[in-house]
Structure formats: structure tokens, C-alpha cells
Image (tube, rainbow, N blue to C red; front, side):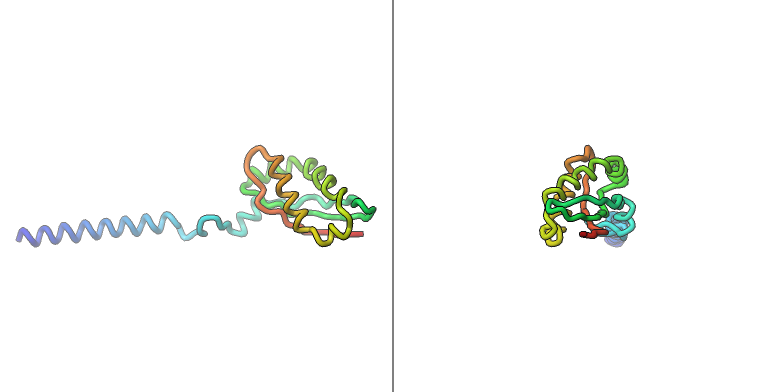
Length: 138
């Protein structure tokens, strides 16, 4: 009879620990994305499109361009929207030293430079990606 009680207590304890571990594992991941991945809805909520801007390049060509700026949070998005004049200023400075050939082949470099420059402007948060959503070279 004594062995029977020990077996029942041991099985009950293992069952409770197993159930607790299962609940813990399910709640930690919660069916959500793995660490580092964001849903497209989260990305869209934390991003904005800059106003379309027209400016000249070093060789006299004109460019019309706008970006989709993805930030790490809605608060960072709001701060970047307030800093739109600084974004425009940074873009003018970057484009004024480019020639049309460099602009056409170096759009990825421009996106990277804009990301770095925008992150320098921020007090909190960060810009995670910059995508060119519209560009016209004339």
C-alpha cells in the first residue's frame, strides 16, 4: 500500500510539472513570430511615406523621389513625421552631389545613406529600413 501511494504521488507530480511546462512553452511563443520578425501589419503601422520631392542633381538633371520609411515603433514614426523638414534637407544634400548615372545605379546606396542620416536625427528609436517607392529622373 505504501508503494502504491508513492507511485500515485510521483505520477501526479510529473503530470502537474508536464502541464506547467506545456503552458509555459505555449505562452512564451504565443503562436507569434519568432524573435526579430515583424508582421506586415506591424511594419505598416510603424512606417510612413515621405512627401514626393523634386530637386536637381549635380549634373543639372532633375529627380522626383519619395520613400517608405520603416521605423521600430509608432512613437519613432511620429518623431520622424515631425522631422520631415530635416529629412528633406538631408535628401537635398545627398542628391546635390550625385550625377544622373550615379543616381540610377546607386539607389540602394542612397537608401542606406538616408537610413543612417535619419537615425542620427532620432532621439529615441530607430529607422529599420528605407525603401524608394517613387523615383523619376528627368
